[in-house]
Length: 278
Image 1 (cartoon, rainbow, N blue to C red):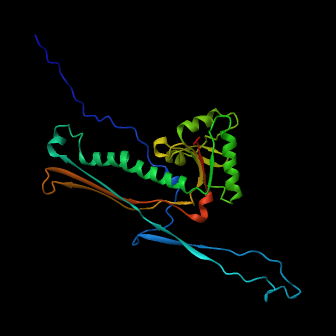
Image 2 (image 1 turned 45 degrees about the horizontal axis):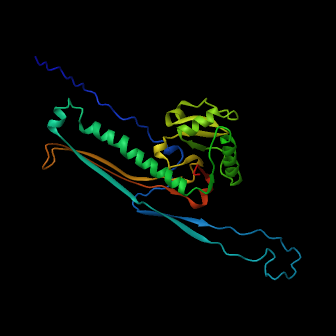
Image 3 (image 1 turned 30 degrees about the horizontal axis):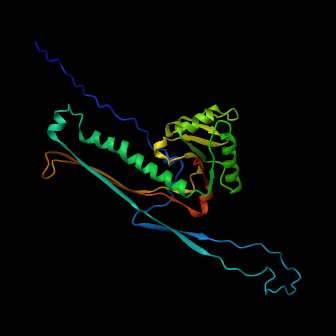
C-alpha cells in the first residue's frame, strides 16, 4: 500500500549571510558630482628655501631672496565610470503561491544587500589597494604581524598623515593572527556607535575594521589608511517597483547605481597596503 507523506512548506526564506558596508569609515564624500560627470582638483607645487643674501652682493640673482621660481598648478580629473543596473520580474501567481515569500520589496532589499553593496565595496577597496602611496610585501604570521603594523604606522607618521582617524582593514584570518600575537594588546573598549559601524577594536590609535575576504583583493594582508585619501561618491542610487507595467502581471523591479572611487594623488601616502603575494 502506497502512502504519500505530507510535505510542508513554511513561510520562511533561508537567507544568505551578508555584511553591511564599512567603506564609509575609510573613505569620504568631500566632493559633489551633482550636475557634473567629472571633477578636477588642483595640485599646486611649492618652492625651495634659500639663504637670504642680506649683504645684497651679486649672487647671480637680482633678488636677495634667491632665484625666483614658478609654481606648478596641475589637475587630477575624477570621472565617474561605473553606471550599473539590474532588473527582474515577480509574477503575481509566484507571489501568491510562495506564501508571499517571493515579493517585490523584500526581493529588492535582498538584491541590494547581497549584490549591490558587495560589488561597490570590492571595487572601492581594490582602487585603494591599487593606488596606495606606500606598499609592502610580506607573509604575515603571529610572530611578525605587529612589526609589520608598526612599519605601516611609521610610514604614515613620516608622511605627516594625521594621527587621529586612521584605520586598519584586515581579513578575519589576519585578525586571528593579531589575536595570537603576544606583542599586540588591542583596546576593545569601543564606543557603541563605532561598533555598530564595524569597528571591533583599537590598536596604536587605529580603528581595527574586519572585512570579509571576498570583498578584498587576493593576497590581501592589511591596509592602514586615513579617510582623507579616498573619495567614494555615489552620484545616483535609484530603485523602483513597478506594479503591473504593460506586458507584465506582477512587479517589475529595476535598479541603477552610479558610483566610483578615487585616491587623491597628493594624499596617496595616507594609504599603506601590505600584499601577501609570495
